[in-house]
Length: 126
Image (tube, rainbow, N blue to C red; front, side, top):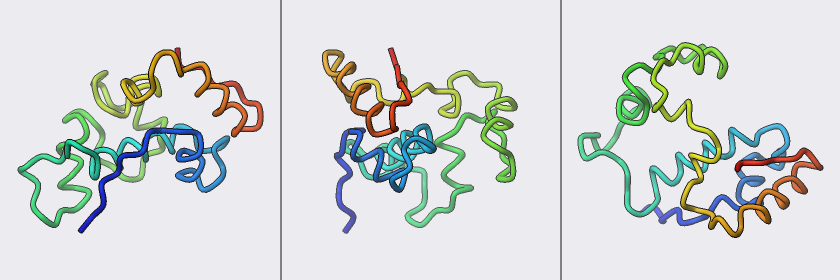
């Protein structure tokens, strides 16, 4: 039985997902958090059409836009350039990915904690 992933994108959780290197892996940790929410969050976002055991190839049809590049050898920048769908998750900003998980009143405090975790690199999502 898989546990529910009910964690908010706190600086501590994001740092853990970045393996202690949040400064280098901030965007990656946000996207990994989003994937964990997609797979294990409530409500479960996995499409019913996915088989019980599925591969990345099965999954990407539902998670990414049909216009998202299929090659696994492209860099992040190449993917963003080649994907023409502005609604694809690869085009989403940090603000869009965490929308609704951090109250507007807490955003400034969250940004400051992230900045502190990243060693002073200022993060602004507003």
